[in-house]
Amino acid sequence: MEPLQAAIQKARENRLKAEKAAEPAPDPVHENPEPAEEASGPELQSPWAALKAFDPNARILKRHRIVAAETGNDAAPYDMLRTRILQLIRKNGWKRILITSPDVGCGKTTISVNLAASLARNPEIRTMLFDLDLRQPMIGKVLGLRRSNSLHQVLDGSIAFTDHAVTMGENLIVSSNLGPARNPSELLQSDHTAEILDQVEQTYQPDIMLFDMPPLSGSDDTYGFLRRVDCCILVAAAESTTIEQIDTSEQEVAAEKPVLGVVLNKCRYSENQYGYGY
Ligand SMILES: Nc1ncnc2c1ncn2[C@@H]1O[C@H](COP(=O)(O)OP(=O)(O)OP(=O)(O)O)[C@@H](O)[C@H]1O
Ligand SMILES: [Mg+2]
Image 1 (cartoon, rainbow, N blue to C red):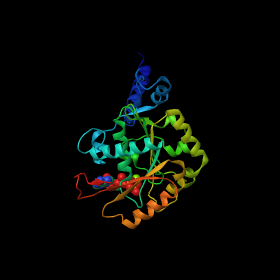
Image 2 (cartoon, rainbow, N blue to C red):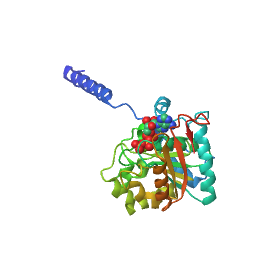
Image 3 (cartoon, rainbow, N blue to C red):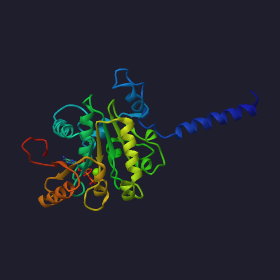
Image 4 (cartoon, rainbow, N blue to C red):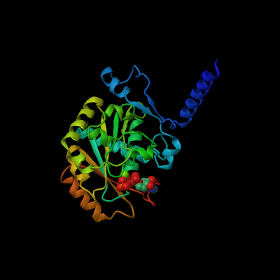
């Protein structure tokens, strides 16, 4: 090789090496394998299989108290909650469940994600989990899901749901946010959002849609979205949520939609040792 050509070749190789080294670590999201033949009917296989698959890191899950991905003592209270919810929604023909609390930090996100993980262990149930706390979205963080796009971009029409949502295992779809939306209240109350959610429900045919929402205090985001769901779960934190707060929230929500129940979270002393009760 001529010296000049050799130098160009060497420079090209060095540049490629440098570009490769500068590439960000790959997101643990990857293309879904071909759908299993025995999955629930060909009409359901393709939309689910078209989504990217995500394998969460066990240490990240543990750090954020996501314990229901595997059967065991830690998952038991979430499995009990799952069973109670399934009984109620089947009896009433409900599908969309909103999860909120009177005040901040009661454990809504932790419970939403654990409940979804518990439901996902039931092969007969297809679950979709949506992060609709568009002010402080946390589902992506607790799962270690670093997608480059957000559910609020789907809702404002800038990206397609197919290019955004991921599957976790065979029967759970997760739709999260990378960061807050600029106009959460307007997005949540818009007819366009309602249409997109209807289309998503139509396409993926889930049995349950879980919506992790902001607390009732502080904004009208959750109240405004209540009309789009079938029922609601209230999460209260032992030692910080007052009976009056629970009572008022329950009455206000119940005026709009049925309250499936109040989950008392963060109990330090409880009969069942799980730090959690109804
Ligand atoms: N049962 C529990 N015991 C101890 N800590 C908990 C429990 N549940 C949740 N937490 C912790 O409490 C904090 C708040 O939980 P989480 O984010 O789930 O609440 P949230 O209601 O979604 O909050 P926000 O109102 O900000 O959305 C987190 O650090 C979480 O790990
Ligand atoms: Mg939250």
